[in-house]
Each structure stands twice: as structure tokens, then as C-alpha cells.
Image (cartoon, rainbow, N blue to C red; front, side, top):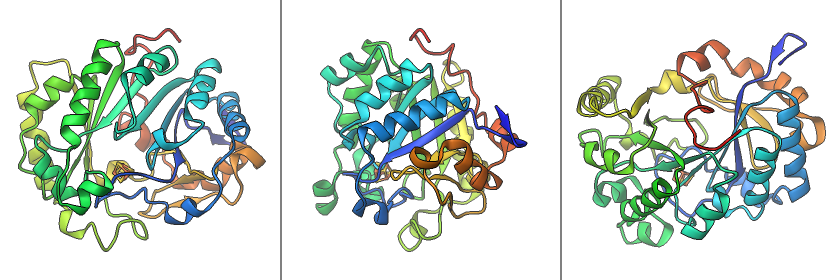
Length: 304
Ligand code: SF4
């Protein structure tokens, strides 16, 4: 939808929960100051979702922090489906159970799982572990994630896999793990430094463009015989191509390596007004170029 010459994004990532029970060292979704603020109420969240749909947003992706920690997540996913959006979540999976996956199946189209490595030693180095594992320098992430993936496959979810390439896993071979998880899309990110979010702890994990390209090239080749879409996102592709809402309801973008936030919130001022403020930090052409508008409707088994 175009209003005042400003085009509404088709997909929005809502970082609805600022807290996370994991300790990934590369994480740029720490949201320290937002953790001290009251969480968005059920009704304010419903209002946000209804407004997004009214403004022409077609897909909502619930992310965090860890979105499964938010007490109103289930209701918000159901409402998003009711108003006609494609629904998606990206989670570390720790709070997901078979019961939850079964109950949300009619409302949730896509399950995004984050798995960075083919063994938990590498996950431990990257901090992809819960707080108590992190303290002890270990991780049980891979075992848990494979369990969730197996259940999600059984239940017919569309699965997206996210992997962050860092100096700890740049040499890894994920072929067999990816085949086991069986995602429709495998998004591979080059670890990204965001000033004020992960600088000071991410530096040792940064990888060069060529190391990232080698990782991609290897896996494109090894997965060529499968139908899995390998979708690389280097640092350039990530900047200015995400329309985001934070845990307080502010809209933000990230074009120049820092976050540009709206002053108002969606629940109080409406998405259109907030988007007008931050849309200079978003580039629709770059969004298209990174494949932002992939075929999220036809690829899922859920009727829309
Ligand atoms: S699981 Fe996600 S939100 Fe949590 S620390 Fe890791 S990258 Fe950050």
C-alpha cells in the first residue's frame, strides 16, 4: 500500500519479546533497555496486528529475544492468522513442545529454527546455549533443535533454518544436519556487527566476505541434489532490508549499521505514521534483491 508516497513493507519482523534465555555472543537483539519496560499488553498487541493487516502487511514474523517467552504470543499468532497474514516465528526452540506445535498448527505457517553448527562444541564457542550451559562452557542446542525439527516435519510445518556464519563455524560442514532438518529455506547470515548492540563481544567471531562466500559455495554444491533453497545474506544484504517492530511497539530499520527508531508506537500512533519516520532506513529494491518477498504463501501447507 502507498500512502504519502511511502510504500508499506510486505513483511514485518516483530521483536515482541526482549528477553532471551540464550547467550549467543553475536546476538544483536539484546534490547537491554527494553527489558526494564513493561511488556506490551494483550490488547495493544492485537491492535498492532490488526493495524499491520489494514496497512497491507502480508507476513508477520515473531522474533525476539526469544518470542516463546512472551505470555501473549499464542493469541497474537492466532489473531495474525485471523486477519489474513502469513505467520512465522524464529525461535531457539527451547520452550517448544509437541503439545504447543500441535495446538498452533492451524495458525502458524512457518517455523524458523536457528542452528549454527553440526556439533554442540561449536555452539558452545558461539554461546548458542542457555544461560546455565553458557556458564559451564557447553551447549545442548543441537540435540534440542533436531528434536523440534523432527516434530515440526511430522506435523507438516514449513521449516526455515537460520545459520550465522562466524569464525567458530566457518569451516563447518552442515550438509547432513540440514538434510535432517529438511527446511524449505536455509538462510545463512554473515555475522553482523551492530554498534551499540554487540560491539565489544562480536569482534572475535567476525568473518571476511571471502570466508562467508566459501561457506556458501560449499553448501550450495553439497545440497544441489535437494530442493532446499540456500539463501545467503551477507552484511550488505542485511542492512536496510528489514522492517521491524520492537518489544515496546516502536518501528525501526537498520540501513547504516545502526537502528533508526520511530518516536511513536504502533499501538498509539499507528503503523503508517511510525513507518513514515523510519522508512528512509529501508530500501524496497534491496529487500527484493535479498529475496525478501519469497513465495511464503504457496510454500506452506496451511490454507490462507
Ligand atoms: S537465541 Fe537469538 S535472541 Fe537469543 S541470544 Fe541467541 S541470537 Fe540472541
